[in-house]
Length: 428
Image (cartoon, rainbow, N blue to C red; front, side, top):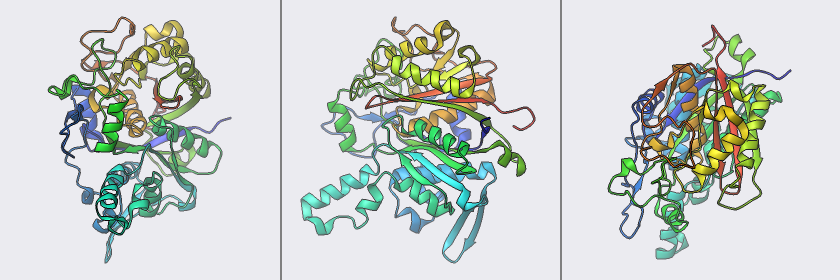
């Protein structure tokens, strides 16, 4: 019999809020976090908009000395982890001569960290490349390598909070955050850890990344004068995704461990499914079979039938290829029940936070279950005939949710899906 794995803490840094309360209020209101790029001069770029994290002050969450040794994606992850551990009741904070010291209260050797990240500290890469080419290698940032590499968010979380179990990074492009959550589920089920800090983080709103995605013709360019209207999943007038940034962190533990310490249980992580398309480096399999298999595997892992799911948080990127393909994927996996599902893309509000998406959208899914509502897909004004399911256009709806799923698709043909269930009665 599989161990029951539960969620006891959530933390988020996002374009629509830097804590769970702000994030949920924006979700319910259908608030867009897309605006003009402020982090660099976009002169010469076709793309001038993004879902930037706003009003983020690293030292609100991290000791000043430590913050200087972290790239932005790592700072996001540590901040969100602080929130999640606090909610879970697993954080001990003390102030000493060297500043604020934070430590987990669970057994350090039985506490792990598995994070999703796509491309690491690209603002560090950009700065060091400029210094290298303009002034030579001796002018590069001394910490270029440890700041830029993708595993440093997991490594820094381990060091800041004192975890001594497994600490590693999952890299499967835009599926990274979802796959990290699934790997964390398996790690606890296997008995290797009692508690795992998991989710995804990304911060790549920099010239190199924007330019690269722009050359792929993947980003929206038509509505740079109306940023809040640019991300429009499943709409016939969509023209590409809007890049975002942020981190979403979940605290997972066995139900037994959570009950023993009297923790409030927010939801159950019931299943995970993963597959590969074996089709194309940037495009999903147009039949939807690959992603559909991941959904079926996640449902089977959770011991649920398609009709047991009331809500699906879609990958929903707002690209020409993704949205109709994902519609086929849902029909393949859910059959006739696909037409009864409530489906939404919260990327319509946050933009596509790359590896951060899986964690952020898992949190949106858990909040929807707990609050009994379906977040809207904003900007869905002219439905694409090829996208003929119920995407909860523009306005929140309310209804009971006992089980929900969140899916991610990534370059390279990666597909990952996680399934959450309502917390057992009396434990939430």
